[in-house]
Image (cartoon, rainbow, N blue to C red; front, side, top):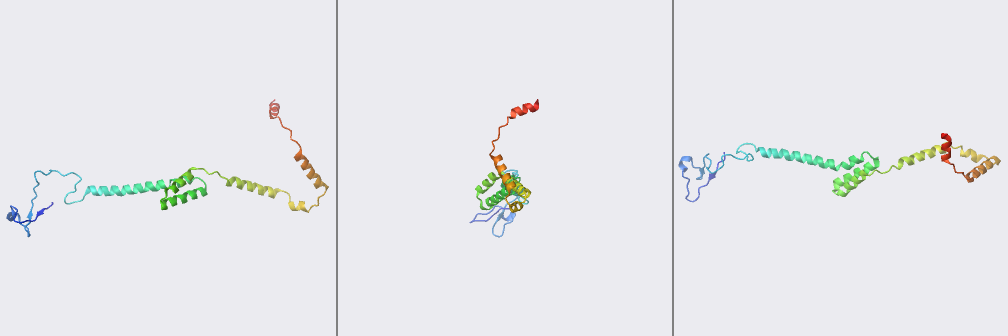
Length: 188
């Protein structure tokens, strides 16, 4: 119940001061009766005089839930380039992760956009073919006859004849092969 007390001012008195119980300083206490022009029911969003404001509690819970949801959505969106680059090479993933952290801590959104674009692009793998070529060259180098053994040999007539025959074969003209005639002959 809400009690409204009116302080007596210059000569004005409450009509029922004596019977209703006058306060120490000439205050008049109002009774429980509602004014005839007042509403007979209160809207649901107004809190009762004594009790809990249900709407405020509901809005507080909603605000906390919305804050957690928006924060989760923001962090999920922020980590999108890293999740996209996770399938790519390690170096590309690390660069995208660094760009994401820079965007997060500096608030320069261009880093995030650059990380997203880098995550979307498939960078060709140059390392694997080059490693394969290097491995093949090492195998060839190991499989070749000992270069030291050939260097110890004196250049004799057999070695000179071999070098000449290789030079002649390298300079000999190669005749074109008619592939259509070969396939017709092999089918027939």
